[in-house]
Amino acid sequence: MNGYEFSFSGQRLSALASGALFWPDQRLLCVSDLHLGKSERTARRGGPALPPYENRDTLNRLADDLDHTKAHTVICLGDSFDDLGAAESLTEAERLQVSTLQAGRRWIWIEGNHDPGPVELGGTHLAAWTCDALTFRHIALPQARSEISGHYHPKATLRTSGRSITRPAFLVDRSRVILPAYGTYTGGLRSSDQVLKGVMGPGAMAILTGRHPCCIPMPR
Image (tube, rainbow, N blue to C red):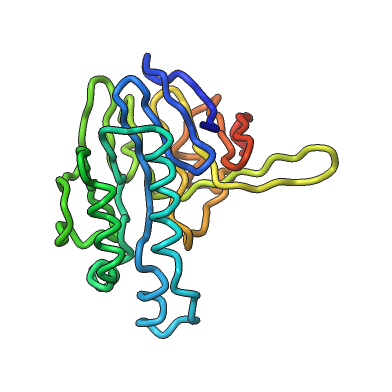
């Protein structure tokens, strides 16, 4: 399994190449910002037509991560659906795939700013959830400690050998981890953006996703 291992709040975590976070001691897989149904929502609101395959692609990648990690618990860190209409637009095949992924596992949907609240899918819906030392929520709180969140869709740029590589990235400092967006149709906010510069503390690191995850000082 391709990932970058790091220590956070006394826990050993792994930032996977896909953008998922794995906590081996808890057999827990965490993903953020799936934004399922984004192509449907974009078309419904008069935007450009997007190829309607992102749900299948996102769920297939999640299935692969679950197969490799054998996770017993899954945390979806909010904005799992693009809005209520997007959640309701899931096909029967997509609903069945979600149910198949949930089978035999504890599944927690954390509420996000896009999320419609409880939908007709299995699992538990919470505003935040704490396990041992770590608290999971959608949007980082300024004074939080040992916090894992999403929302910002961070990405970072690595400059090497005269070229630049920009990828979705995990941002990590002493108090928090911010996950990249996991969904297929999700943009990103550069780590140098003023918002993320304000959220992340001095000495923050960026772990770039991709075939070979790598850790660099967070570009500011």
